[in-house]
Amino acid sequence: MSQADGMHINPQRAKQLADNIGHVTQKITAANKAGRNIRLIAVSKLKPATDVLALHQPPASHSHFGENYSQELHEKAALLPRSIKWHFIGALQTNKCKALTEQIPNLFCVSSVDAVKKANALEKGRAALAEKDQNEEKLGKLRVLVQVNTSGEENKSGVEPDNTTTLCKHIREQCPHLQLAGLMTIGAIARSQATTADVENEDFITLRQTRDKVAKELGMKEEELELSMGMSSDFESAIQHGSDEVRVGTTIFGERPSKEDAKAKASAEKAEA
Ligand SMILES: *Cc1c(COP(=O)(O)O)cnc(C)c1O
Image (cartoon, rainbow, N blue to C red; front, side, top):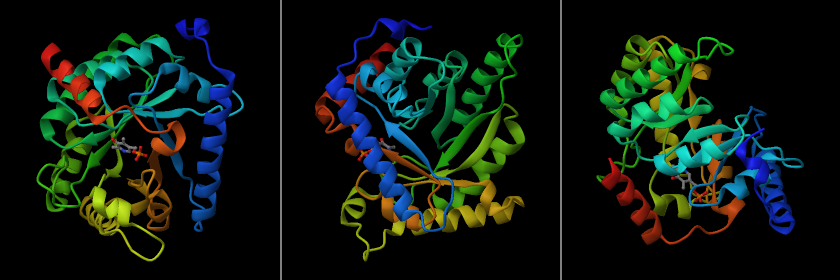
């Protein structure tokens, strides 16, 4: 039982969403020539909780959803079933990290760790949750990905490829409640939109090379570090380049409200902090 029991889902909308995610899943399977396990994160930012619930219920029964704004994630997580596996994929603010991991037990992964102080704050929150949660089924480590700025754009979040090992090492050695699960990139939008079967996306190549280097430097197997890359416009190409996880929003949910609305939401969050 959850508060979601009282939510009204429009059956037509539910069918549309189930069809859309079905098409994406088919494309993933077709692109996945190597037959890896590929996780599909349905990116539900700025979309209503009823959309998430519609996809979480049969026939789609989808579990993995991604959100970019911490306030929005807190609200949806409180409203929707605990069986949902949430991914925080947006730019992390240090002062929001502890609440994120302490208050959302069904947070499955934080995909955008790009600084030691953010990793430390996430660790603190998860440790606090683990302490409170003692009587529940044992809470495992929280998966985190290190976000890499593969495109070298100044305004992009993420660590430089050459500095990635340092942050990965810190998480492994100093954050016992976190599990370093892999690396993530967003990449340059222009490159993403220009990606076709013939035009390779350099961001995917850089992320893969960075992963291989980090694995070597930390004495890990490459398969122990997943690659999270690929969005609506380029997920098939990302899969061909070795992606283990794609994050797809628009193709499943349709266009989002304008950037201005998104910005207003983000700055409202800042003001609250
Ligand atoms: C919004 C977002 C996505 C989804 O983008 P679409 O183009 O709508 O598929 C994926 N990853 C991140 C980090 C995002 O912020």
